[in-house]
Length: 285
Image (spheres, helix red, strand yellow):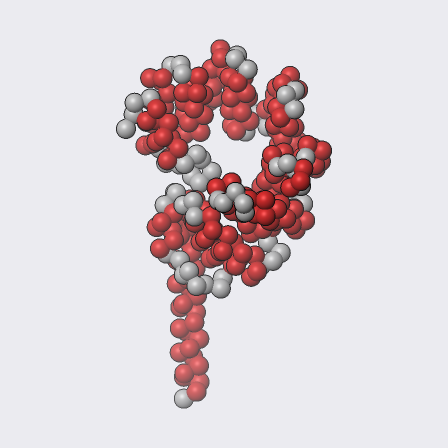
């Protein structure tokens, strides 16, 4: 009798684990298609599984509920403290809380973000996302919160050892902060030469040239990017954003944003809410 009951228990447990795995798989697929509410609906909010809590945290992050995101990233990090991705996303969420929450709490939250980013890099020294986030923190944060250009350069140099293109890209951002615009352009062009298929670096150069008033050169790069990537929502959003900021060729910007709103985007793309806001500026719906 005990054997039968034990066998039933094991079968039930395996079935439950299989169901949970299927739920996570469906939820992950919904997340990748920016269906964050639908993804959340598939997941157990009381789960002790690190991967489940990590996905719940990312869903809440994308839904701009950064307090909830912190809660679930902390759970994931407690359950798997050696996972650099969990620590990196925890840093992102703390950073967003610092940006958007009570100003009196911002310094403490920003410090927690820095600690999380630094821990993520300690756990995985070649984690590109963690290094990028730590670089951005050092670049933007004041010295009393642990930021600084020298620290940012140190991270950029470390990144360049295994990803030269990203290293140049980060050095370009640092040069712009220092108002060393020729150096910034040189680094961006080196980033493109090092990774010619990396669309983000090409768009960054086009945006940079626009900020320098070199609109013809900027438009030429955007046009080349669009020719090589005719169905890329990234190109439409980036080019439209520049045109709207400069208040020129607004009908073209409107058309590109309308295409963006109809496109299938990922969590790595700008939110459609932002595209909708820009669209309203040019008379779209």
